[in-house]
Image (tube, rainbow, N blue to C red; front, side, top):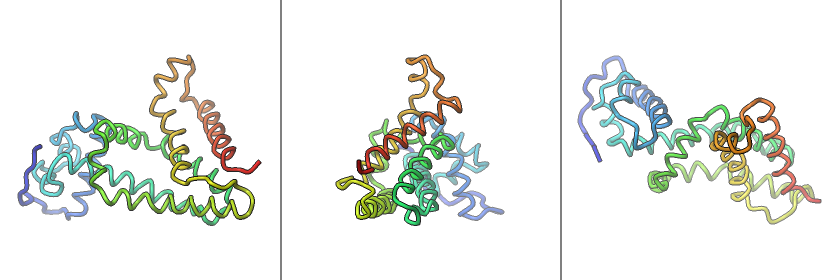
Length: 216
């Protein structure tokens, strides 16, 4: 594993926070395009307009930089989820909104899917050493758990719904469809990425998720 720790070469006109943000953005694009194995630090440096040694100074190694990118994309989606203010909604509306949001977020951020594909290809060995990711995931699960409990108490939702399992189902219904759209379109002979197909998929997702949590 290549690792170089040295003083920054020339940071005149740049502050550390700006430089790191530019590196992370460039690395996000590089890893999303080429995966961890195919990504090159030289190209990341070129994208960021920085000397390669400065990247190693801030992030130590390509593996550490990949982890930083994963943490940043998780931070982005968790921040966006918090802005939904799900606890201010009625329970059924909150679950529907989270389902709609997840679908739309994945559509608008295809790099999130490709980065997770790459992380899974390497058996999540980077994320396993990150406490930040686990801490970031806790609030959305807590919020969803509170929504489910409120719905149960008011008689809207059935009991016994695990918020972790429900969140995985919401994410999985969107993730599998989008990450496998090429093969699915070929197999079924349908273009699954048209606006009409997107609308049908989201409607199906909401029906499946709400059909599971709502009481008969």
